[in-house]
Length: 130
Image (cartoon, rainbow, N blue to C red; front, top):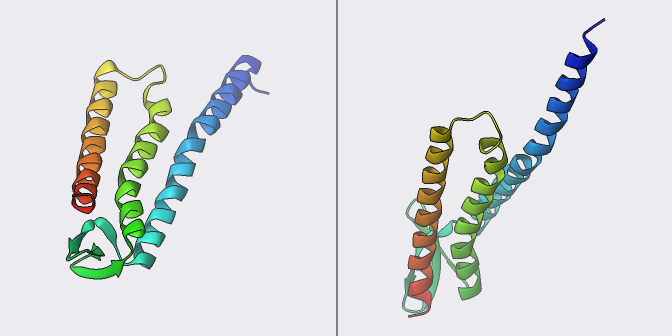
């Protein structure tokens, strides 16, 4: 027989971890969908181009012509994906027990990736709406 207080503590900790992991599992599913859809569409707008009013999604130097709506949707997808990722890991990072420096590093990395994703999408969308 185990220690009842320890067993209760371990059960509570396990339940908290399971709840905290739900956003991460959701983000992993969204990541898989993002990859599958990007492969099926032939690439992303961030890697694509616009020439003479035609919109192309690109991946590894191969381009596929798509509609303007598809191009815009692809351009918006990257920052949404990055924001979901940053948000899904935040409950783990900001729980008690982690050092302030670790939290600050997480925030700095999240801001960098969010800024980069927004800049890439802005570059794509600025080309669409110029």
